[in-house]
Length: 527
Image: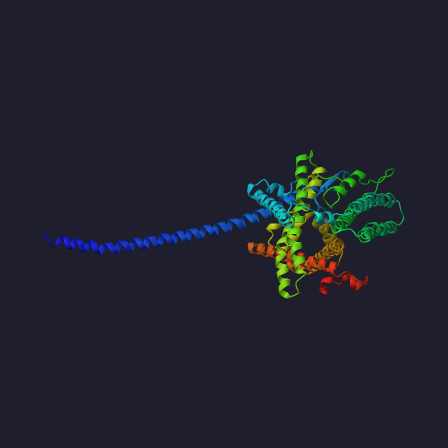
């Protein structure tokens, strides 16, 4: 029996071994399944957390904006029975008359540049600028045997600055004096004049006639008659548009106040101070107020750094045109036209196009406006929002340029709703889009010296379609990718077509001054 037990024990051990291995494999499989379930639940919880935080952030932002607006807005005064006044909060219909509330806040990029990860992206763009300089020096050294860093295109684009200066002085002097004293003249007679409507119509028509000549025909005459180069053209035309928008805002904001507040006997009507209007003409906003939130002092170091960034952006744009746009489209002019060359030209223009878009945003909406804001101690620096995070084109249009959007919203969209008694919201939105597209196309046509409605088609047709299809209900990050892809492609189309038309205007100049000759693009017929 002693000889038989070991084999039996060995037999039992051999039988139990595979059972323990099988149990271990089952346990290992259950652990893997549990880990996979935990990982999925963790990912799901992260996604839910992100959605909840976004919703909470949006709701808090809306609540804070509402609380801030209601705290700043004055209460309406109504007389009570005992002769005292009581405070009554504005109703929903009265809020339609409330305007933009200015508060002290920094620009978004100034806050983001405090983060090292974001500032590194800024450093990357500086490195690209240095690479552009090095490549230009290297090519000039290889071609000419010496280091040459010429800026002939830059000097050409900003030529005839003397003409630009005296034209700007005339437009500024007119905008400073005529609208202000026209308002004072009208307001001083309004409450004592027998026919208030006749006085208002007469002064309004006279002011419109003078505005049409000085701020309408005069800048166009200067640009066309003196054959200004492109950058000088844009300075005159953009200042023309700015003065028109500022003077309209001043009249629009002050005239209702004069009408609603008749002076007491023996007193003269109260008008805005001349200094407040002068400050408004230079401060970086298009909405007039008698006072704005102001900073306590000027940060001169910030002014110097911002001015340096503006000059850097100027040279950045020069290198983009010289190194990426000019070689591409001068070489393209020697090739026969075909669908292949057209498609390649569009896609090759995407990189310089999106770089120019980002450069214009940073140079103007951030640097230029912050420069004037700092010099004037203007504290509300929300000139733009985080448009780069937009998942809809509707949000992109609202956040790209807050300064212009505010003007279009308060004096275009909201006034349209007020006139239509809050009906036809779609028509109000379409009218704002059309006006914006026309003004954009006008600025480009006068700046480039030819009519090619690329911007109008992209803005008034594709922009409207994207605004209604990619609306604020789109929250997925996929739509942010679609938004950026649309911007890339749109900028490529614009840079490609405008460059082709520019060189077509040089190769095939106009032979007449007929209407069809002026509005027909030369690139369609020039071979």
